[in-house]
Image 1 (spheres, one colour):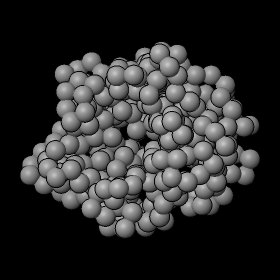
Image 2: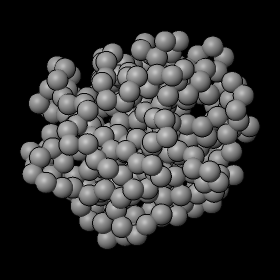
Image 3: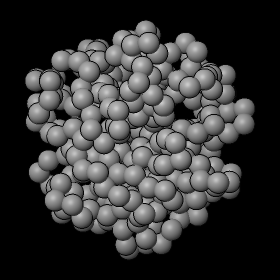
Image 4: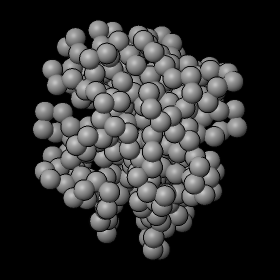
Length: 305
């Protein structure tokens, strides 16, 4: 696996104005809508409230932002806190958005759907906090494969095992709104002494390849420095790990990745194919958005469904 390379040495988006994105813009999801690349990103105001902003681009590099967010905290499981860290996948003509609903007390994994990426229908919390086969804390970060395998949709997520927070789980669904955990333990555990010693958190939606289900993930070490790793799951059994990075492929280097609301963070959440390359979109220091790239052949998807 080759390392990722920055498209630019400067952020693609930075905080602006005195409104909903004054404090930070980070952790972006991306997808295509017609000829445009659409970015849905976490925006934070000066009081810390998070909303989901909208930006579009003809080339996936230069983005024009909408004046207002497209998703704001309204439901009881979001109210007074925020809607955070989106991931988006298109399935059978509809867009599905997973995000964290935070009500200042609990963070829980939620899902919404849309036909146009602007108007969203909430379907509620899909993996409640403090409950589950092994989770004893919050739930976050749902990365959904864009097709069924063995008659089921599959999603990787992050939750907290007893005494071991920040680990990756796996769940399945037949309708995308009701989810069942596949295991009674994490599918991807943290590893002492490595770049993912404290956190192993899904990145963008996984990609089905000839070799298996490929997923970039965000690892945090003992000092909470966030770097990017990867894992390959069995396409016949999405709860089985085939291979996993021992070294990160991307790490904070630029000043704006090292200094911000949370220092030393690159946090990958968006990925899209652009001709002979993949474009990858990440949050930097919980304040900025950056774009990286890697050749298409590094992650080679299959078109069979």
